Amino acid sequence: MSLLRVSNLATRPIVTVVSRYGVAVFSVALALGTALTLRRYDLPHPFTAFSMAAIAVTFWYAGTGPGIVALVLSSLGMQRFLFLTKSFPAVPLGNPTWSFMDYSHS
Image (tube, rainbow, N blue to C red; front, side, top):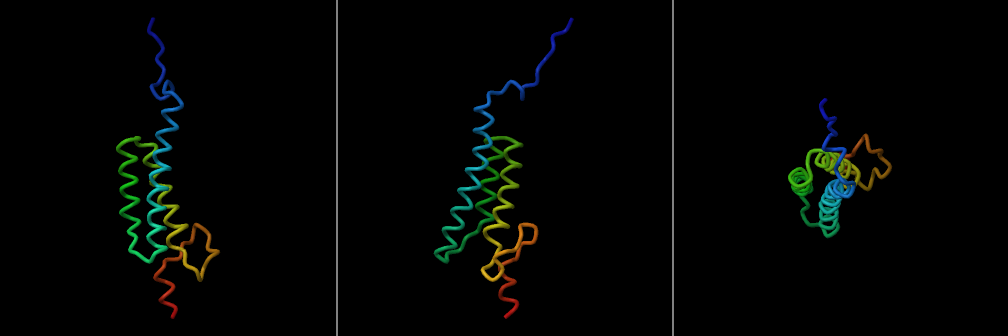
């Protein structure tokens, strides 16, 4: 009679899973915070470089699941905080207004 095996994912401690997804949230929050700080002082803010670094660090250290979470969080953060302009503050997340469109109406 063979022994029933339990998946390795089911036997992981909850602290490990929470810390892995915490790396995803923290790295994207750090990238977004850095980009918003640079934007406030009118400095160049290459959020794509910051977010790609956050996604790469998350995939490397935390794994595939948290890496995908970091990818989704960084794209949502980019749409919500960086591409909306002051002239269109109430645009929903599904319809981002690019910052260069503000200058095309003038």
